[in-house]
Each structure stands twice: as structure tokens, then as C-alpha cells.
Amino acid sequence: MPVGGAALDLVGVPMPEESFTAAKNSDAILLGAIGGYKWDKNEKHLRPEMALFYLRRDLKVFANLRPATVLPQLADASTLKKEVAEGVDMMIVRELTGGIYFGEPRGISINENGEEVGISTEIYAAHEIDRIARVAFETARKRRGKLCSVDKANVLDASVLWRKRVTALASEYPDVELSHMYVDNAAMQLIRDPKQFDTIVTNNIFGDILSDEASMITGSIGMLPSASLSESGPGLFEPIHGSAPDIAGQDKANPLATILSAAMLLKYGLGEEKAAKRIEDAVMDALSRGFRTGDIYSPGNKLVGCKEMGEEVLKSV
Amino acid sequence: MPVGGAALDLVGVPMPEESFTAAKNSDAILLGAIGGYKWDKNEKHLRPEMALFYLRRDLKVFANLRPATVLPQLADASTLKKEVAEGVDMMIVRELTGGIYFGEPRGISINENGEEVGISTEIYAAHEIDRIARVAFETARKRRGKLCSVDKANVLDASVLWRKRVTALASEYPDVELSHMYVDNAAMQLIRDPKQFDTIVTNNIFGDILSDEASMITGSIGMLPSASLSESGPGLFEPIHGSAPDIAGQDKANPLATILSAAMLLKYGLGEEKAAKRIEDAVMDALSRGFRTGDIYSPGNKLVGCKEMGEEVLKSV
Ligand SMILES: CC(C)[C@H](C(=O)O)[C@@H](O)C(=O)O
Ligand SMILES: CC(C)[C@H](C(=O)O)[C@@H](O)C(=O)O
Image 1 (cartoon, rainbow over the protein chains, first blue to last red):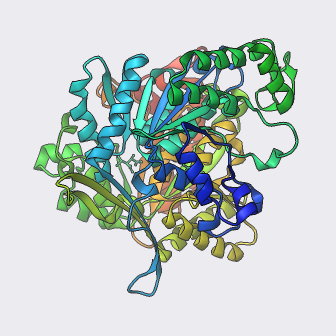
Image 2 (image 1 turned 45 degrees about the horizontal axis):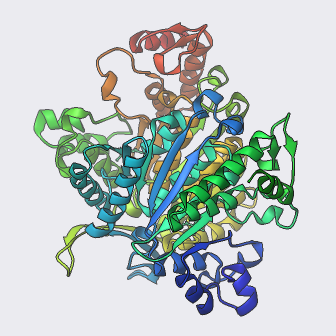
Image 3 (image 1 turned 120 degrees about the vertical axis):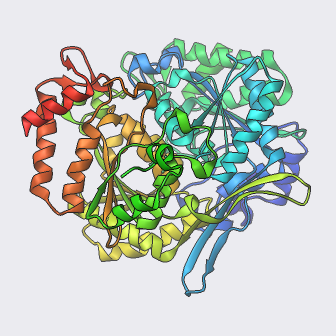
């Protein structure tokens, strides 16, 4: 179903009613990257990104799981030194339907001096913090048992409540080791020693920033999938990267993040762990056989386009 | 004058009246890092960091200049590959007295469901954006003439206004090349290719996060000074790093960020460019002679403590 730029071209809105209904009635949703230069000057409500908002908000997919893993085959692709990047394997759990992305009041108004004022509101209710914290504790439990909650509790009252609720839940997960870190420090520690992190939980805007940072330290943002989960309805699965309009139509894009998003869809969306593993193994195999798109290319490997990379993964299944 | 933890111990408040009056009546202020484990559990209004808030707010030092420079002597200290880190030389201009740090409403309250809700408000008036943008344009003009404004205008209305005002001012600075970048992308680009940046201007919270990230890519956060300037009163000069309570009293801390803050004080606070240059040259000379504190040590150099590093700088003056 069309959403974003494609929908704007077809029917003039970023999120057509029919597309939403189809998504809502599905078992799981695989989303392609949206946006592009063509719509960059559109007014806010007619921008491709609005499709993402409506989907996230109306499907209530509050839990965004963003893995950042350095694959052994790609340890050289990072701009970090090999010994720093090698072995990085973390999961960022980002709150996706609350905070400053959706808080009211918001907008641009005129103040008593006749001056324009822009307002956005960071707001979290206790139950919103609790439910994302639970997802994070459960996630950490299935990984290496370490959860780092990132906030700015020395400045933001919304973060004070965040830290209080996360701390209170910790007693229900005695097998998980909880720590807290300020967001500015987290932005540093991700570069200084990314291996210290197992699972990170944070709010919508900090998660936006830190997950992009973390994906870049892996050196392979074209490789990273994501899952957005709700309490009951269908999940939303998409690559972390954007639509890369600068290379559109040139058969250069790395298809692996989208392919790995399909694997996450199978695992988290449909509970088909074995099928998910088959896709992941096929991707690893294609990489081990030396195939690389331009973004992850290094000398000694075989440079291929988007289509050929897809075919090599298929051969590996 | 005591502020922060020292003031809490002496008189029970983080920002004593006398200290503020003395600061306000000075030509410039050199601030030591504040905080420590001892006061970590204090209630918010009795935390050392509050001194920073009051000082910044009441001295109206809205323009925070944070250089991130990779010194040739220290190109190896970064966790980034040498070819990525070498030559990095940027200035982050962070808005320091507005935005979500100070916006109202703020606090934790009970909503209509009897549930706790935490609120912080990101708010910028046109004149606040204009004055920090002007400082940034002027700064870029004296550097390599490139200014990148970082916001989240695809999501936050406060950023929409930010982008509009910065864009409108650009015509007054035809010699400066202005670009815009979303904050999540900026967090990535700082790692992918930090050399692309000359001057960055951004809001209070994004500046907090990105400047810490940028300082860490230089690999020498113990080296970086900062200046906070107001429209007319005294400026505030301090190292970017915190108080490092884990190594307090061990004669291990790197004194260079504080020494270089004194240089910034001379340059930006008192207009004494020559005296500032003398201090900067002395620091470079001590580094060139191979002296290193633990945080920037690499084999082949001479490991020294805080005191000895200071003495070596003195010898170089
Ligand atoms: C496109 C944008 C609105 C979106 C966000 O900020 O959430 C994107 O950056 C992401 O992280 O999925
Ligand atoms: C200590 C803290 C309140 C402060 C801030 O967030 O501004 C610090 O991180 C800084 O960047 O100077």
C-alpha cells in the first residue's frame, strides 16, 4: 500500500485511509523508507514523514527496538578503531509514541510582545514509562542482562519521573542489572567504549539521536533493521536508514537492512524464529562470500549493486 | 568564591548570594567543575548543578562556545580512526539560557486518572533564536565561513521556528555558507566525517548532547575549554569536562582544559588575544615535549600527574 511520497503523488496525502486500514488489519507491516527531495518543501502536514507519525501513533507501536551490531565481516567498516568497534552488540529500546514528538501544547504562536514563539512539550505519564521499561527489562533479560536507562534527570522533570519509574520496576527483574546514564554522557560513552552497552532504554527524542549515533558506530547503517511493537496490534518493521534520495534509481542502495527487517518481522511480529534465523544466516553467508554494496565496501571484496546483493542473499537461503 | 558542592558544604546552598554578587561584579569568571558523589542523592534544588543553572540564567550567558579540536599531538587519542579524526576543528555554538532547560510549564503533577505525569517545555522566542544565530554567524565568519544549524524541524515546532529565523538572518551574512541538518543525522555525521563541520549552532539540549559527543571524538575531553557569553555582563569560562569524582585527590586529572579556559577568558572575556595565545602556545609546547596526563597518554610519551603537567605548561610560557 502506498504511504509517504508515493501516496502524496498518487492521492495527495501522505497517509491514505485505505493504506492505514490495510496496515491495521495485517498481522505485521514491512515499511519501506519514505521521503525524498521532491517533497522536501511541502508544508509540514503534507510531508512524507507524517505517514510515519500517523502509523506509529495510530497503531500504538510504542516500543521501538533498534539493534546496533558490528558484524565480524564488517568490523573494518566503522570509522571507530577496529578494537573499539569489534564485538559491539547492543539493543536500543526507544519509546516511540510519546514524549516531545506528540506532547501538547505545540505550535508557533505570537506572544504578548507580538513576537513569534515555538513550543514543543516533552511529557510522559507513569504508565507510558512503565510499559516501555517492561519491554526493555524483558529484552535485557533475553540478552546479557544489562539495562542502561538514559535520561537527563539532572535537568528535565520529565526525566526525573522517568528515572523514578524505571528504578521502581527494577525489583521485579532481579536478574537484570540496571544502571542510569545522562544523555550527554551516553553520547560520549557510545564512542568511547560502545561495548559497555547491552540494552539501552530511553525516550523518543533521545532514542532518535542515540540510535542513529549507535548505528553509525557500527559503520553499516545500511545494514540495520528495526521493529516497532504495540501491546496487541500488528508491529511495524523498517530499516533504520532513510530513503537516500541522493542515490535513488542507481541500483546502489544496500538492501540488507530491509531484508533484515523482514527477519525481525518474522521473529517479533509472527513468532517465526526459525524462518527469521534462515534469513539472517543467508545475509551473513552472502557477506562471508565477500559481496558488498558501496556503503560497506572495502578492498578485497566484491562490489555489487542493490539487485545483485539481493540475489546473492537468495542464493544463500 | 564557593559554588556547587563546596558551597553546599560551607553554607548549605549550591549558589550563595555572595558568590553570585562577586561573579556578577567581575570582568570575567573562571569556573571549576562542580559536583561529586557526596551530593548525588541531594534533592534537585540542593544539587551542585543548580549553581550552573543560576549562574547561566542570572548572568544571561546565552552563547556557549565549545570548540572541538583534534591537536596534531593527540590525533592518536581518539577512538576514531586516525584519518577520520586528524584535522577536526569545529566550534559548537550552543544556546544556553533557553529551551527545555528553562521552559514553563515544568514539573511532576497528577493527571485526571490519578497518575503522575512529568512535563518539560521546549520553548524559543524569535529574539532568543536571532541572538544566538548572530553569534554563530559571526563565529563562522571568523573561522572557515561555514555554519551548520542543527534542529529537528521535521518533528518539533520549536525547531520549525528555529530554522525559519536562522534562514532569515542568512542574507545579512552573505560570506557565510549556511546549511541545516537534523539532530539525529548530525549525531551520525559527527562520527562518519567530523571534518565536514566548521561552526555548528543549535539549541540548549541538542548542544548539550552533540558537544559532548564532539568532544569525545577528539579523544581528549580533558583538553577542551568553553566560553559562555552574555550581551554585556561578564562571561563564564569553564572546562567542558565534569568534576571526575572517581579520580578526585589522586593528582591524576588533566589540568589543560581549565588552563585553556583561562585562555578563552583572556580572548573572549577580556579581549586580550595576545595573552591568550601565549597560554595556548605554552600548552602546545608542553604537549610537543611529550608530557601527558593519563587520559591522553600513549606509549612513547611521559606520563605525569596534574601538578607536574601544570608545571610543564608554566615552564613553556
Ligand atoms: C523521519 C523522522 C520523523 C524519524 C523520527 O525522528 O522518528 C526518523 O528519524 C526515525 O528515527 O525513524
Ligand atoms: C551538569 C549539566 C546540568 C550541564 C548541562 O546539561 O548543561 C552539563 O552537562 C553541561 O553541558 O554543562
